[in-house]
Image (cartoon, rainbow over all chains, first blue to last red; front, top):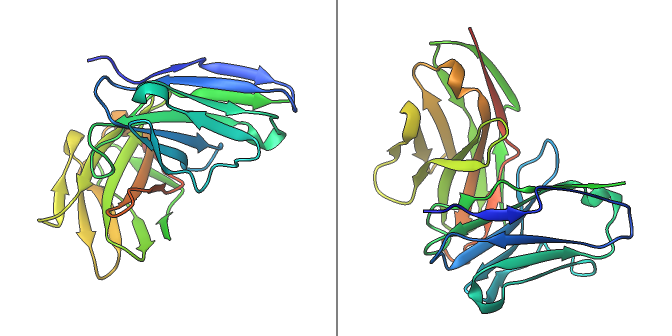
Amino acid sequence: EAGVAQSPRYKIIEKRQSVAFWCNPISGHATLYWYQQILGQGPKLLIQFQNNGVVDDSQLPKDRFSAERLKGVDSTLKIQPAKLEDSAVYLCASSSRGFNYEQYFGPGTRLTVT
Amino acid sequence: AQSVTQLDSQVPVFEEAPVELRCNYSSSVSVYLFWYVQYPNQGLQLLLKYLSGSTLVKGINGFEAEFNKSQTSFHLRKPSVHISDTAEYFCAVSDTNAGKSTFGDGTTLTVKP
């Protein structure tokens, strides 16, 4: 089966600009996660969707980050406006039945904010 | 609230030697436990997981981990490592009630010839 797809793979923007990332999970996976991984740290959960509903977004900086998962399939994560500290790899993952099952990760999008 | 502490940021070891990567966690609720591996220039993939039952869990590539509830630990072990095991290893927990996942900051395992 096809894995989790993410695009773009790399993005360089200036601070105060906006950026969007796209994720297409494995077909049939109900749960989708967005993580932020800063260099030297582990992935930090930003938002978790179950189908098209939000399960957890407690660590999402809602003043500048937004995410949606229309129709419960693919998802977009947006940052507007970007700050220097948003430089990180943004990982998307999906799982078939929720939090007690294996998460399948995409290759990530490396964002550099200058 | 939950947290994960990986006690060693870097572990260098010679080929064919045993290795242990340590992971402690803290949580006010029951959790599931996972180890993920990230090879250079690749995404994260699951090594093994503990959901319930036997506290000794076997995973891929000869790795195993033991869940110790009293010490809130989930250490990863391999009796004999290979050069190809060089990677970043992440310990993670998931809240069994709300499903929130928390990852440790990772341990870089470097296997030297």
